[in-house]
Image (cartoon, rainbow, N blue to C red; front, side, top):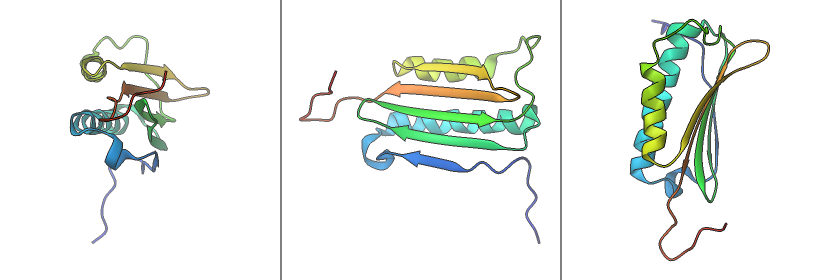
Length: 124
């Protein structure tokens, strides 16, 4: 029996040492953000493509979700999902942005700083 797809396939590109550099608390938030973003894309965007990127640098974890869907209509006033994603970023001292893409779609960017590793200092 063939599996039914509920939306576009979302390829994942990972950069950096996600398994060793990202604390469990950050990983838990990132997974929740990814779930919410993909759910919203599947339910509301009408996208045919979605790209997910998770990047770890010395200082931050950055998660981006880009689609080619309808984008967020200016008339949409319900923002509970976006408020939740913003709250998760701010809880960890990070940022959350949603912007339109040209010619169509949405780009979600969720970035949080990583704590300094024991025995090392973060570069400025």
